[in-house]
Each structure stands twice: as structure tokens, then as C-alpha cells.
Amino acid sequence: MAVDVMAAPVEHSRRRVLRWLGMPLLLAVVGISLYAYVSTQELDTIERRVLNAPGLTDRVIEHLQLAGLSTLVVIAIAVPLGILATRRGARFVAPVVLILGNLGQAIPSLGLITLVVLLAGVGFKSIVFGLVAYSALPILRNTMVGLQQVDQTLVKSARGMGMSAWQTLTRVELPLAVPVILAGVRTALIINIGTATLSTFFGVQALGYVIFQGIQLDRTPVLIVGAVMASGLALLVDYLAGVVEELLTPRGL
Image 1 (cartoon, rainbow, N blue to C red):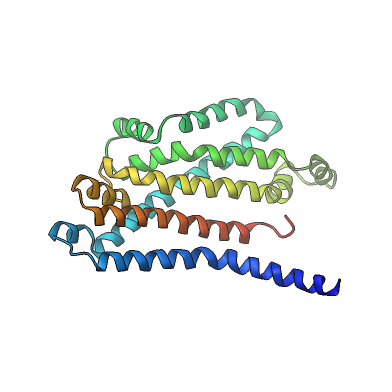
Image 2 (cartoon, rainbow, N blue to C red):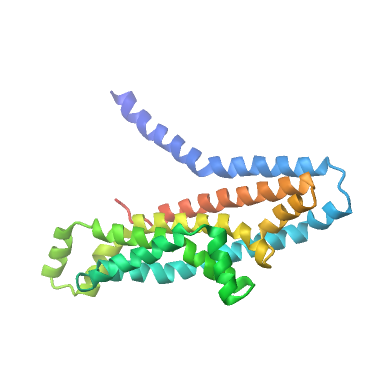
């Protein structure tokens, strides 16, 4: 029995280390393998024009800017709307808010971004607006679900202790809803990372530009580099978002 009790923390520590280090190690292996593959290829002038360190760095930065900015805008819009939709005096807006969120998800991503570009023009801002519309539902829905699942006896107890509605929301409801809300933010961020590859069709040269160049020019090394970098970036961002989610989740939840 004593051996089992001592073995449990050790096993938990091993799983924790594997969870924290497994993905970085995998991505490191993939990155090294990709570099080794490209190094063995005899690249022509067209391929070298696309596959160079400064150019690829710019593509990654622009990709992250698109996904990061659009996610921040979604948080600023969807979280307050989710809170509003769960307030007793404004619950009538919940169906309307959910319909708008579902509408963005129901339209195919390429079609939605195309509609936004037709209305707002080609450029970085238009892509951000399109990503915001497409990724709003996970944060909106999770904010509502997280607040709705808070035990109402805790809310009533807080009000009975003299807390105002605002104090109850910020000190009781939101902290308890944080894990669910953060899961929605993480989902929206990954959606934006993936969908941002479509920005190349609308004048923004993110990682989708590398993939499209590989297809259009029939250059397999370029296509492989673009696809692996886009996939690896999505996995890395998902891993980092998971770390932040765990760190921001209140202890005991």
C-alpha cells in the first residue's frame, strides 16, 4: 500500500513532464527534419526566392498578427456579449446573439472572407474582420455556458453577503467560468491560425502564400515547407494556449 501511495505522485510527475515537453520535442524533431530535407534539395532560383529565412520569417509574423489580432478582437466582442446574454434582464438577446454567432460558422470560411472583402476591400483589415466573424461562436458560446453552469447557490450566497451584481459577476461567476471561457478562446485562436492561410487569396502574404506558391509553381519543396510550417505553427500555438489556459485557471477548478 505504501509503495502505491509513493508511486502515484511519481507517475503524476512523469505524465506532467510528458505533457509539457512532448509537443516541443515533437515540433523540434519536425523542424530539424524539415531543415534537413530542404538542405538536401537542389533548389532553383524560384524556390530560393520563396524559401529564404527573411521571407519565411515575415510570412510567420504576418500569420501570427492576423490570428492574434482577430482573436483579441473576438474576445473584446464575444465575452461581453456572452455576459450580457446570461444576465436576467437581458436574456431575450441570447437567441439573437447565438444566431449571429452560428451564422458566421455556418458560412464556409472562404466564402465569408470573400463577402467581407467585397464589402470592405482587399487588405489586412478585411481579413481580420472575416476571421472575427468566423471565430466568434466558440468564445461566445463558452462564455454563456461557463456562466450558466455556475452553481446558483453560490451566486445567491454572494448576493446575501451584500455583494452587488457587478461584484458577484467579477468575484464569483467569472472566476468559476474561466476554464470554459479559456477553452473557447483556445478553439477560436486555432480556428484563426488555420483560416489565416486563406489570406493569400486576398493580398495578405501569410503562410498560405508559401503553400499557394508551391501549388501554382508546381514546386514540391515549397509546398512541403509551407504545409509543414502552417501545421507546426498551429500545433505550437495550441500547445502554448494550453499552457496559458492551465496557468490562468484558478486553483482547485
